[in-house]
Image (cartoon, rainbow, N blue to C red; front, side, top):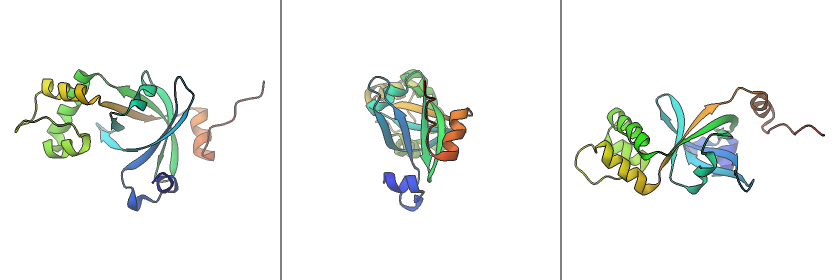
Length: 155
């Protein structure tokens, strides 16, 4: 699947992007396939995976979408109460059924859940939202042009 996304073969992987980043503590390079979402006109990713901790406090990342690699800034929102407000707005916009499918957050009630119920479900799942914003610096231009970051200058 990663190869298909890198090459822009979207027929079989619609909605999947690759998130490229370096671990904060280990320096390990990550290339994670994730489902892209759009919230309030912003590109984002919902995840409960442990790798999201690398993005806490913001991080420079790259995103491959349909074969195009773009430098971006990632900001993690993992506060359950703030996320509950976002999810509540999402439910109002797209409906409960569609929101459940996108997020995987299950609240066992036959009505739209309250903000408190959402916060508890988010807390239980360890869900986070990663917001992705395009960067406009020299590194970003180099990556767009060559597909990889520039080499550091020799000392």
